[in-house]
Image 1 (cartoon, rainbow, N blue to C red):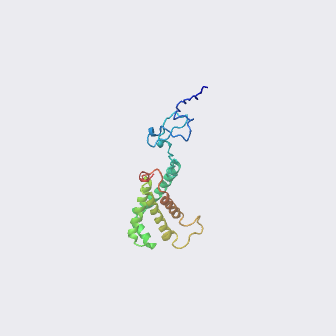
Image 2: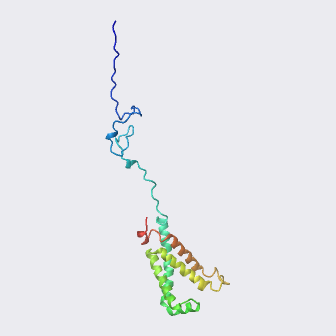
Image 3: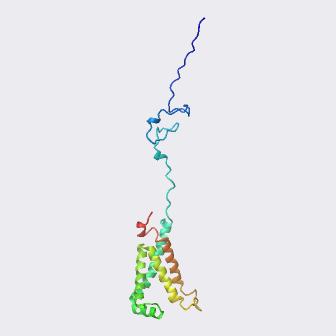
Length: 201
């Protein structure tokens, strides 16, 4: 009576990177990976992936509307037009100080001798700032203050907003300048100006 001994079949060692390896089996190459690296994907030509390559960089930064071509060009035109108006008005006040002081005194503006120089100089300085695009928000505040002062002490001083036989109403230009000044105060001078170099991107 003979006895038979069952054959032992030797299985070839499985490739640790093979997709047939059971998921529960430990990865013997784990200790050979670079610290923080990601395991290679099946069929990928890259053996190891840098975790920095897999990080989401987030959405791309969007340029502000005032820095784009259309916004910057529109604000530049508005700055130049406003600068021309203020430069002419300021220069006229400074060239004819006696007349300006007399007008301020007649309108009841306090300290007419001083304010005639201050307002004329401020208008000329604001015009220069608008041309180069520097301190535009501060210039917008100055425009608003001057325009509101002109409406209060000159155009609407008597309370007559409309004039018989005259189109529109009194103080149209000053009211428009007040709105422009508020726009500059809120938006700045746009992308084409000195302020852009010092503004946080």
